[in-house]
Image 1: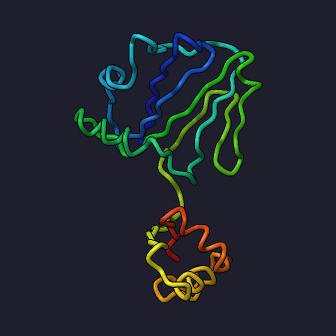
Image 2: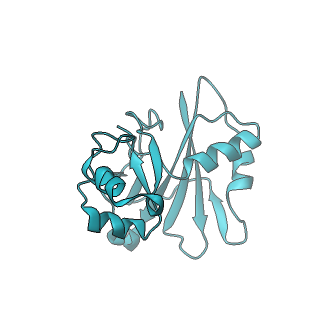
Length: 179
């Protein structure tokens, strides 16, 4: 298992660098240049071969959270014939840009020195989701879904009353975690 990194800078914000992190299984040499040619626009961005020296703050999703970009990155790598098993995107901030970064400790991990990434694979068990069309549900069905007694979703208490469920129905659909 190896983690490879591709750093991309933007011409308009040279103090912020996007880093694509790719995990491969076994001893695999990943052709970063092949990937680079597909992951940035040379008109507004450039590949950073050597990351700048100095203080920085790097932020990425921690391994308990699936990076929303991972699916697209894995698909792009597969289309290039590259075997990548996991991916995450991080942002590295230099200079004054470091002071303006907000991150959520529940979702993100931060680094102030070069990270040692053993794996990018999400940890834990992902719960499936189920879509409910609330606009098609009766008041009794809305109540049962709201209080955790719905036959398709027992013990999934949303702690919502009928009025609150009807407000949710105005947004058409609700995804509910499978228990």
